[in-house]
Length: 199
Image (cartoon, rainbow, N blue to C red; front, side, top):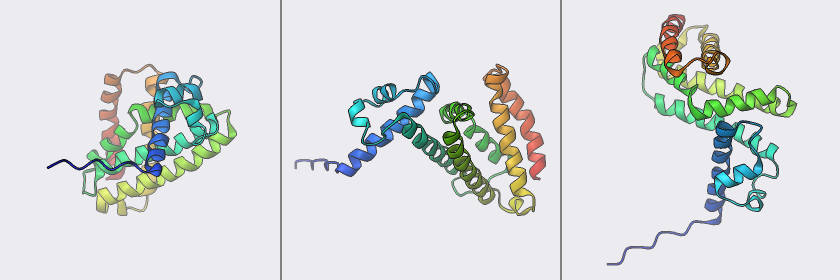
């Protein structure tokens, strides 16, 4: 019996794949070449599409980078949700999951955009709005996973403090040249103090 032919992709599916490839390529370029080195030509090359094929999706570099902010937010939230996956976790497990969200390519790409936004009002406004939404979503996911601990009146404020601490510690890789090994050791120490904040 002959095997069934694979279903041909619809135009909408092909467009969605191309758009996702362009956004993934933008993240890759930000991590590898930095904000300045992330050009539309380089993004198209990394995505495997022509610059002409890129235009219907994103008309300019600014459009691509703005969409990348939202894309990165979606990646970060997906990673947190996958780690929590609707189950009850300990405070330490929750903190480790959030710490991991502050590592890797998504965080490094976002860092490039934060730095660039210092002198780009439009980018900064977009980042602030998205980061606020991401922060709220992460706190909500944490509350669901941590259960009764989240019933404390100051839980939301404590989580904002915790996320800010993680962000600052992660940036020490750049600001202080701290190695990953040293950073992880410091995280282990700081995690104990942050756990006390929540318990």
